Length: 131
Ligand SMILES: [Zn+2]
Image 1 (cartoon, protein in one colour):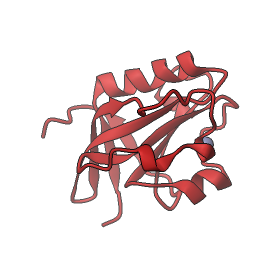
Image 2 (cartoon, protein in one colour):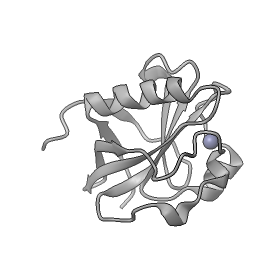
Image 3 (cartoon, rainbow, N blue to C red):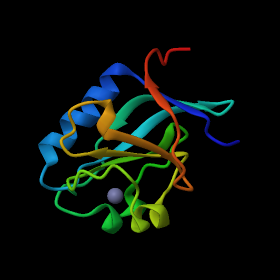
C-alpha cells in the first residue's frame, strides 16, 4: 500500500534536526524505526548506523550493515547543500518505506522532506505516534 502520511514522534523530529547540525558539513545518516499501518507510517525511534559513516556520502553507505528487522522503515539523511529533495542517487538507493531528507540549515520541519521509495513527496506531521 502506498504511503499516504508520515507521523514523527516529537523527539524523533528534534533528533533528526540536531543530528544533521552535528554532522554538518558532512551528511548525517540515521535509520528510522517505527510501524506502518493502512498507509500511515509512524516513526517512533532512530538508530545511528553501526559504523562511523558521517564522512561518507549517502550513496556510498554500506546497506548490508543495516539491521533489517521488522521495525526498520527507512533512512533519513541530511543535505548540507540545503536542497531537501532527493538526488538521482537517492532515488536509486532508496530502501524501506520512506526516505527522509533534512536540508541545511536544519532549523525546523520546513527544512525536512519526506518521500516514498519512488521519490514521491509524502505529507508529514509531528505528533502522537503511540496509536
Ligand atoms: Zn541525498
